[in-house]
Image 1 (cartoon, rainbow, N blue to C red):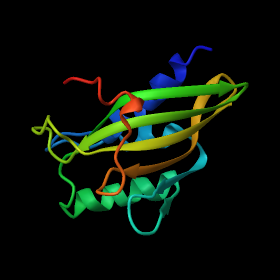
Image 2 (image 1 turned 90 degrees about the vertical axis):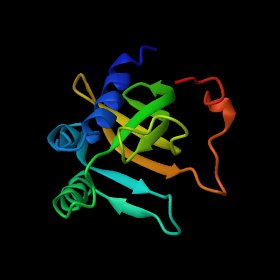
Image 3 (image 1 turned 60 degrees about the vertical axis):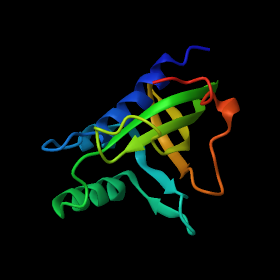
Image 4 (image 1 turned 135 degrees about the horizontal axis):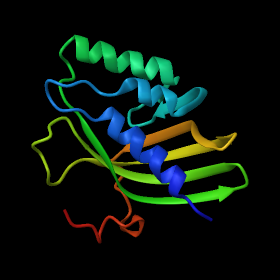
Length: 149
């Protein structure tokens, strides 16, 4: 099954969130990538943090306005997508940085993204992610061991 359209949506999501100092992320594109309100869950901490696409964007805007977030980069390192009919799920291993100057040993995590096809367009219906920490490391079978930058 051809996953190219889902590849593009995922790439657009990560690229739209990423921005260099003095620039702003493309949050309108982020909003457009979601079906309805979407559901986003950051489970990297002791308790899950739940967002809609709108509340996620609002938090980012507030952090930028308060100068708590001046730049950010997130990119996909590995993915596996399964499609059945008009639904899909993607395992997306990512790395991120709060500085574009850092390029090695960046923190990583796994994002499980669900998609629905609405007309001929794939949209994100939900996602849940967990950043690596001392208890959880991205397994090497997810392609990380073979990556070089």
